[in-house]
Image (tube, rainbow, N blue to C red):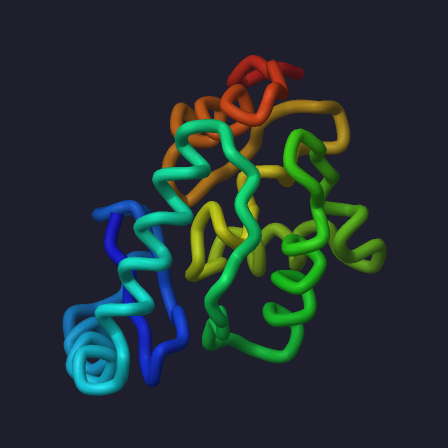
Length: 153
């Protein structure tokens, strides 16, 4: 995974090579700024949080996250942050007006796992779409005690 921050604030956390991975120029500017302004402390906190997560611990996020996006995307990402560990929601529940638009915002979530876009599934319980790949999504859900088959319909 790759993390990016600015001024001690997490701006992105991606699986390397995932869909919607940021361009090199954006990464360079975030890294340069974060290294001058407490970036290392931020990345230690993110690393510790991820280690706890992958060990099945539910640690609070003790650092600020502020993803860049449109107002609609940010509203969807705020809703994602409220989905509890071990629970899922459907795309249509995030935006009753347009599950497709919600899906687009979920797919562009720049802070994987911490803003838990992997907890969003199809209305029929299927695992659909994940910028990090469906097998990773299945793994993350199973880590949280949710057993769903990839491609279930």
